[in-house]
Length: 344
Image 1 (cartoon, rainbow, N blue to C red):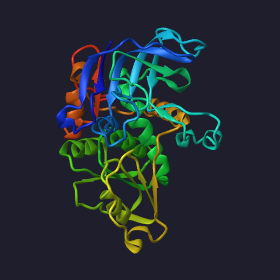
Image 2 (cartoon, rainbow, N blue to C red):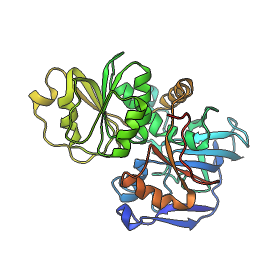
Image 3 (cartoon, helix red, strand yellow):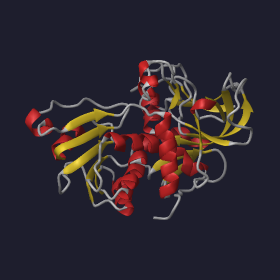
Image 4 (cartoon, rainbow, N blue to C red):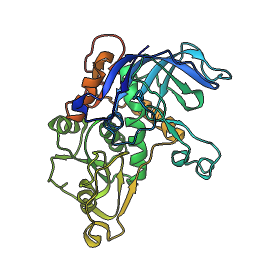
């Protein structure tokens, strides 16, 4: 099979990915083999390729927003049948026995493993997944539109929950890409006022189209105190900015897996009046199931910038340089053309 792998972690403009021929994978016990139909290009893939996340597997194949068709079953796999369409997300496996797994917080399992980091992912023609960690996908979304739901959507959903947004409250979103544009729609559906701060004009235009109450650029401050905020941009210098924009008892959730250094915080300006700061670590399978049902029920508009499989390295560079509208997606067949579930 053809696959893109990380030759050596390096800045994206130094082309850390290489297209190679690899042996076809075979599904192990409890796994299914998928023919990849689409794979989202996530900022976490960029962190893997550039080495922001320490390598866990040499020459790993990135990609963890995978839509595929089941083509083979490993021993004991009974949940799916050949021909089924399933999704593969970031969380690939957990121990199922530790205190965190038993408490329903499997995202904190110390033995957790991740698609496209510990194990080869979806920048390939074929991939495997444990059937217990695969998702059935809503029929309302085609392959290209479903792919970003599997990380951008799920992580955005968990981030919104972690931000403790009250009904009808005001939410600040810092950075407006794949995850943020889906999360904003969830908040708007709850009756929230959404305020967006992002450096890219593409993101600002999309935020306005989706119904944000206010949209600003770097250095601008929302016109009102925020009840909750989420940082999607991997920029630690936004933490004190977002905390200062919160009102009393507000909560800031940091959604990224990687963040640049956070500047010193001033207790009175940033944390006093019971403001809270929390991180978001991966997701549970329950998060994924809840979000996919909600996405279908609300008819989320998934804005995508597609690229052919052979353009994976270029798509990753476009993501790094803010040249992507919504979510970037590798499509295995057919012409590349921007799409969304419902016209804006």
